[in-house]
Image 1 (tube, helix red, strand yellow):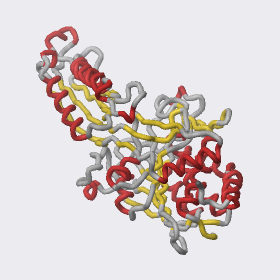
Image 2: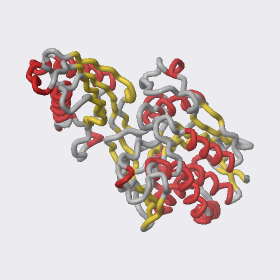
Image 3: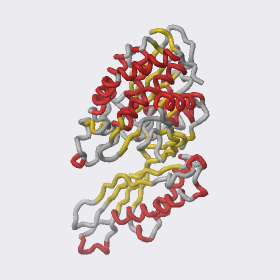
Image 4: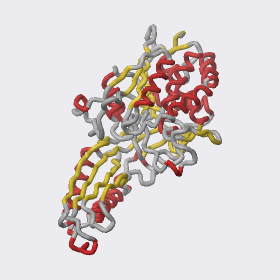
Length: 429
């Protein structure tokens, strides 16, 4: 049962509605930031301006590998962190009466792919049929703006939280999570966390998520002229031999006996993806070297440490294959080294989010055991802080013509605003 006064609830809902145009404009500005890996500065600056608009002082939190490397949630970085500090802000009430809260989101996006086959340019947000299109519109810039607008709605209603509220805008959710880890460790622990990550085509509540490892395999063969190709060793073909072993491993990991109960009913939750390939020099030369980048999923009940050992074993076995005789095979790990996670569906913050979403929007959040991962794992696994990870419906996440439903975007904002008011309590602004 909600502890919110009905008048306060109505004032907050009216404020969210009044801010819808401002919210859409703020989302457009953020989508225009091409915040791929290493290029997040414009989006971080935009989020800093958003926090300033709330009357909060932005805090820059660096990601320093030397400080994080001993933490079990740390992942080997891909590039330097110079000039890419996370942005946070902390609100403190006049008198703390309620429970503290983190509102977290990531600003980084994956590459847009073939921009020429998007209906509209990926960093020029377009609204069609009630949806905003653009890279990151769904994953997860709508959620970033919902965090800001939920707080703004309380202010517009003449209120503010009666407990500390932290805002975290982080980098590298899409490849390491180290930005989230840096912010979590830099700021005091709060009583709960909300992360408005999108659902794939649904308004989803994350109930569990797989872990992920990124690995890189480089095969060096023996180049010759193509007329003598039988005398050489083709590095591209050798890499294919290795890839087949990983696809067999993927099939094994998706056998019913290897699937955790939290993923009951999910088809093929453990995925191995060959995301990048670099190789060859000339169409008429047997290629010297090929490097493939892999993303290996980890089922709940398994660990990143165990799957890392599995990857090392698979690569060693492939290197001993007769078809790879004469090659040199090297393995390295960079990027995700992330454990899987089960979220506590019975946690008060989760139950509160479910209730407010249903009451304010007239529909239920759908349980979503994810075959991807979020930054929520850091708070749940390593800090024992309950996490409500939920968000708007997004389509073509990581694909072409990514979009988010604007009605769903506003529904997420309503839910965060009401939950923040009840969880933290309110005082006059």
